[in-house]
Every structure is written in C-alpha cells, then in structure tokens.
Length: 319
Image 1 (cartoon, one colour):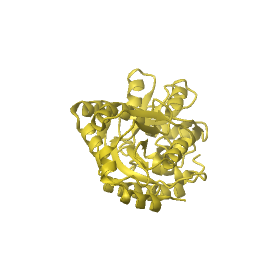
Image 2 (spheres, rainbow, N blue to C red):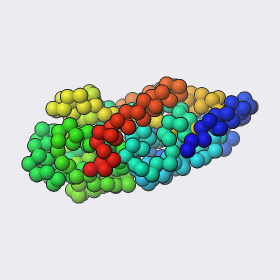
Image 3 (cartoon, rainbow, N blue to C red):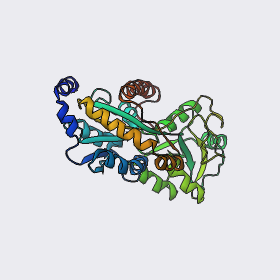
C-alpha cells in the first residue's frame, strides 16, 4: 500500500540545489475538514509568516469529506516535492481505526514535519435547553433516559468523537452520536438545539459560551485553561484519569527531501515563536510547539498505536 521506501530512496538522491531553490511555486496547504474549523484558525495565525519566510504564497485549501479521509488521502498521492502540505489535527491518527475504507497509512505514507500547536483539550458544551450545569448532572440525565441525549460527531476518530466515546465507555452511558461533515456544521446544529452536546476546541467554544448561546460543562485536558478558569477538567468533574487534548500537525507526502523538511520546520518554529502569534494562540486556547521532525515522526507512530487501542476498546461504530 505504501510508496514510502521508493520515495525515500528518491529523496536521498535529491540534489542540494533542488532544496535550495525550494519553493519554486506557491504552496498548497490541504486542510481535510470544512472551512472555519480549528485548523483554519491556526493556519490563519501562522501562514503570513510562513509565506514571508519561504518566499512564496502559502494557500489554504479545504478538502472535506469522510471525517478527514478524503483530503488526507489526496495529499498522500501528491508528488514528494514539498509543494503540497497536509495540516490537520490528532484525527490524522485517530480516524483510521474507526474506518474500513482508509487508503493510506498515517505513519508510512507521509513525511512528518512538525507538531505545530496543541490545545488545552476540547470543551464539552451543551445547548442551554439541556437542564444541567455540571458533568455529574449531565451523566445522571443520560442514565435516567438512555439514548435520548445526542452529541455532535464531526467524524469518527476526530476530537469531537474520541472524548465522547471515552466518556460513554467510562460511565456506561448511552448517548446517541449524530454525524456531521465537519465542526462548523455540528456547531450550527448545536446552537439551533438540534443536538444536545458537542466536544469542541476552546477557541470556538469560548465565543458562544460568553454570549450565553452554549454552556460549558468541562474541559478534556489535564488542567484548566486561563480563558475559562471557571470550567473544570473532566477529571476534576468526576472522571479521574480522563485526559484528551487536540494537536495540530503538518505533513507532506512520503519521501520529501530532508533539506526541505528542515527548512519548513524552521519556518513553522519561527512563526509560532513570534510574539504576536503567541498572543493569538493564547487567546485561542493554544500553545505553540514546533516539535522537530524526528520527534514528531516518533510521536505520530505512538499516537497511531494508541488510537488502535482506543478503536478496539470503543468499537468501530462510534455510537
């Protein structure tokens, strides 16, 4: 299935001059989800600085479908010239165990560039019509009427799906999964009261919580976020050991020349260290990371292994 060995061999033969001339054309960054989601927000903060550092426009391209499968598979098939990037979330490793029609290997079919940023976890938010203000109250309601409550699922294996299924598994509750094509669609229906709850990034949750259109119940990370200091972690709220954070990574097709990878990583590291970007990230509930390529490759391999374990535990159905 993987073309990695052949592409890697070609990368070793790539001339230094080729890397020095990189990039010769604008760079496309494929986001495999609908516009307006968390990856878009991260990219908006850093792409102006990436374009300046690399000397070519860095253009975002949304290719949604299959909870991320469509856009990710597309990038895996592109030439290993460093001109097509994939920027997505932890769903890169979390989606495959929940789907039978995955045409790529999240580890072998990509060049791992960097973990650019991570959040403090997803916020479990509910529509104000749901008569709860705490996690124990929500779980009690779910137990009283199994199958009545619903949660938005922006794709099996995504950051909206994994925390919900872990919560259900830990508590033995029956909460119905309602599928969506992406975060934006799920948030729209949540705001309209067509679903009861959703696990969403802090940067999206905060704006709706502040206006009273949604109610924050708990945060999936290990610690509270300064932007919502009143919101407890899931562990604090009664589920010890619960910790799920979302991260944002950058990949290219397998076999990209190491010199290109090094240059792009350096551009990302400089961008996330910029004081203005750090301020934007802080507002969005994010922290810049810029993990080096080798460490990121090891990280992705481990995350893929853990995702397989979660997939076996909660099942492929996700419901």
